[in-house]
Image (cartoon, rainbow, N blue to C red):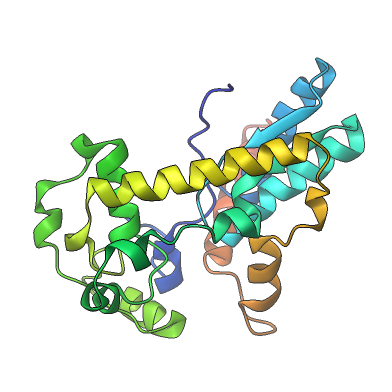
Length: 241
């Protein structure tokens, strides 16, 4: 098992135009893609031909970077790199919320992609020492759909999440993680046995193709462009480029 790589593209905060936000430390899509391409190069040159990636950050551009690195590994080294969580049967497998929450709790959690009951429950299961005890007194930030979620994130004083984290529990997190792990393990074994995994629908294809109106800019894209420009200008000034 390769060591964990704590890098990801884009935070939920950028959806509200808050590109810099406490607790969010991101890299550009091109940076993440290069890291994985570099690693697949060294793995490929050492003879590895199978890589399974377990990476659950759900930003569509984050998925895209991993899928592009996967295609590189396949085309250059004739290997197979599968980004498991991007496969729809795994991404959409968890039914914990419907089984463990009341109708009122589901309604209060609303439409969320970050920091609601689910993600806080996962952290309470994995690393409860990193979750503030005040989470169970946290005010809810309930959105009814994606545009409403963006509206809330643009407000002054947005707490950095959507949903109702006060209902989070370690039991919910454990159930969710075990369901996803079982699904990942089962599908990985099927792929090793010859399943045509490239025919399986992917979350990133659906999101990147259909989630934004034509011409709409990716959230955080301008910030990333300026960040890269500053870096390149500094390198050029030092004659390091």
